Image (cartoon, rainbow over all chains, first blue to last red; front, side, top):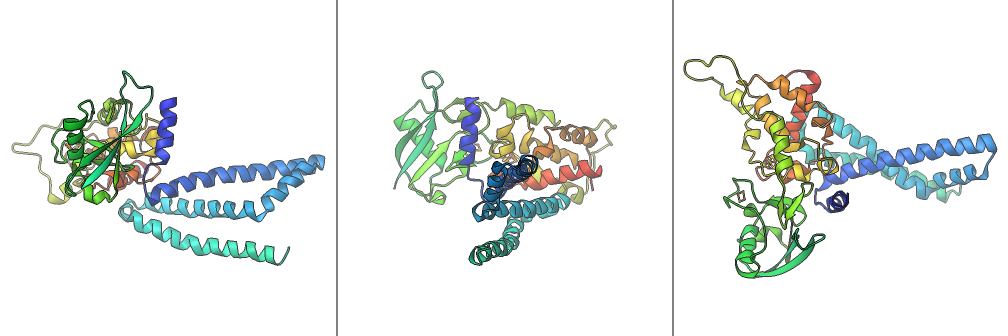
Length: 128
Length: 234
Ligand code: SF4
Ligand code: FES
């Protein structure tokens, strides 16, 4: 068990490059979605069944820009990364160009996420 | 020039857990990391344990983590590392025996599990089993493997579960699956479609980056995945 823990810890420090980071973000994105959807369902349940304040408090948390900005980051990244992997799995020939494909993914990702951040900030500024 | 070599050491007889020890070594920029290890073992600390045989990148015995990435010590030049301190650690995911030596047995068990040999029971022709240059080209890349384990031990899926056959075994299965003279492709594809087979690969690419023979490992795995999914070798 300790050996396994040591491996995981040292594994995180392994210099795998951009594609390893993409995989880590993909996993984090999956977790983030489980947490978000879980919270959402749970909060609705609490507010609707008991009119509970806890549910309302949870709604406030996940509607806050500090929660949404990283959440959108992970979800959009997860979606695009998934598309990249489907593409590569369907056409194994492309795997030789994985570096380029990963760059392409970031090129698509950045403006998309930029737009989301823009809307989040616009909402804060307009005081909604 | 003087370089610092920081080595993750472990002596099973006296140590509870691995610890780092730093050595100062006089080195040429064109020295290889293996040369530094030899100097340390020869002149500073004879108890340092590591594997090596050919010293020319062909036997595959000295794969280790150098500055956080799997490489062959005999193919890594000091000048290419570009750092004052060189960190050397054993491969991850295989049981540690001593210092830089890990137990390769689980690795070779996975290798054997994919039948890495030519299977063909048809009576041989008078001269030889002919193959066109194009047919040979189909699996050329995966013939280059030297079984150093740099790929398998760079793979997070393998760290997470040692029962995953790992990239090296798939590379060597690929070498025969796509060989026009071989007759056991279906059997190998069946073995690799197991839950610890190719689908443990999450296209992380650490293996491809680590391979000292520049084999397009993830591509080979992708081709095997596709062959399993479509049932065709084309
Ligand atoms: S595929 Fe490359 S990294 Fe993996 S065992 Fe063979 S030579 Fe080593
Ligand atoms: S010593 Fe043989 S490959 Fe490095």
